[in-house]
Length: 233
Ligand SMILES: O=C[C@H](O)COP(=O)(O)O
Image (cartoon, rainbow, N blue to C red; front, side):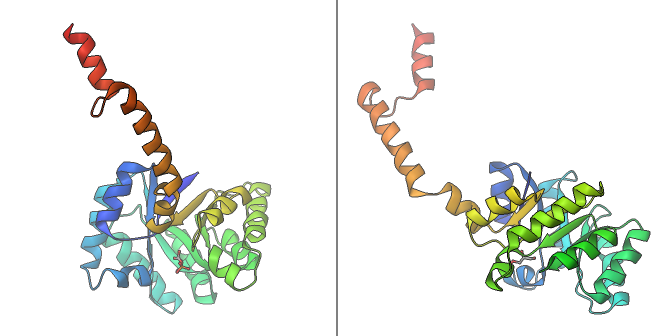
């Protein structure tokens, strides 16, 4: 299982790189817009320095034609690093670009996947990752879990090296569903992690444990303190 962050907000990446086993960072032009007009390449290199070379960094091309996408991809790998996965929309221009980029050994994440058919074409084009848009499919009345399951089955059937990096999540349950359907990776905003880990039920349980402990050993005494007291005697 790979957990990625769908943000380029440096403070959030620094924070969650320490908290979870962070497998990487993804972005798209809308996510970049949220940060304002940052120094794009410098910002992405900064993210790389936080997450490290073993984690995956996915940066989206913005060109509209095959030629423009390929040029964007070369600019991305030249100005960030060669390990970056270039995100390419899975449309006609993008699929043609993916074929060219794979011939040039550039890592590719086929993105904007709303259908099983797009995913199948992206697998055949040699994409390293597929990014199906979970919540957006749900909003369109598409069975996102089934799309992911069918793509995962196909990848397994043909022993393809392509992995499914599910994206566009609005709930924790959607992330679970994507993994259950066979996605190897999921990218999510920090809102998903917060709602999973800052749940009041968890805080209440921790508070109850603290109260019970302190009622016996006294406020401010923890297990490390007890151990220190043993050493002092
Ligand atoms: O890059 C794709 C995003 O994960 C899409 O997420 P969104 O549907 O929340 O905009």
